[in-house]
Amino acid sequence: MTLLDGKALSDKIKEEVRVEVEKLKNEKNITPGLAVVLVGDDAASATYVNSKHKSCEAAGIYSEVHTKDSSTTQEELLELIEKMNNDPKLDGILVQLPLPKHIDTTTVLEAINPLKDVDGFHPYNVGRMVSNLDAFLPATPFGVMRMFEEYNIGLSGKNVVVIGSSDIVGKPMASLLINAKATVTVCNSRTKDLASHTKAADIVVIAVGVPHLLKGDMLKEGAVVIDVGINRLDTGKLTGDADFEDCKTKCSFLTPVPGGVGPMTIGMLLKNTLKAAYLRDKRESK
Image 1 (cartoon, one colour):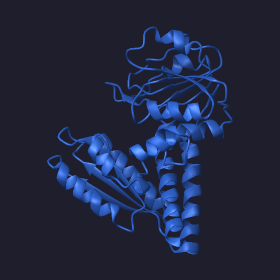
Image 2 (cartoon, one colour; image 1 turned 60 degrees about the vertical axis):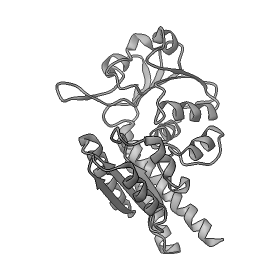
Image 3 (spheres, rainbow, N blue to C red; image 1 turned 90 degrees about the vertical axis):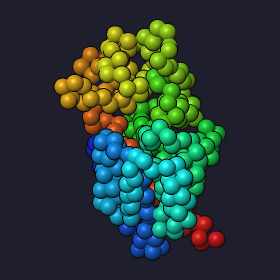
Image 4 (cartoon, rainbow, N blue to C red; image 1 turned 30 degrees about the vertical axis):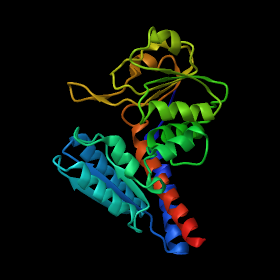
């Protein structure tokens, strides 16, 4: 069984981005810029935003963090986004989810300029992704695809089961796999007899937020398991949606939690921000 080391791969990607950013600065006098907006006091979101900020600085990307308290109105947030849409220093805008319940997430995401939507959540980019056109891809599924590439895990003709149908992971993951010519089955919390689907799968991608849902006896011999879930147990330990110890005896490839898919998300976000800067240069050069 081979562990898919997302930490090492993410570090490799961050270094590639740092080199490209340096080149862009020297040759084009362009510094990629990313703004992240955090509304409310969710501790996990705050930790994640801080990690993004540090990663940007390490890669030479200009970084802004806008922290707003949970009483911030939707109108105030939309005004901030409009200001950032018009800021030439910023190539990427990311609004950290989840937002407080009084703010409509769809309205906020649609307000972001699609050319600065480095999270890949705007309907413009979602539509282009589904149509297999060039687009900003959601960072987590994008990271999973990069892992498949790095470890030479072929997708064409493979039976892939995606467990989870969220807009952030499950749906875009399925679209990217379909574009790669895989045969894709999407399961969710209401799927009857989940094991009947997973036992036929060459590859399982799980992202439902249920600790240890996927067991070894639900897999066929040699399956590839990509565990996107991250859950904190009562003991404080972080664990995935797959039962790692139980699954590892069946798998040919398996992601650990932590240290698997998680680190890839920030690496791919930096790649999207760099891409946005190159697109800005292309527009300005016309």
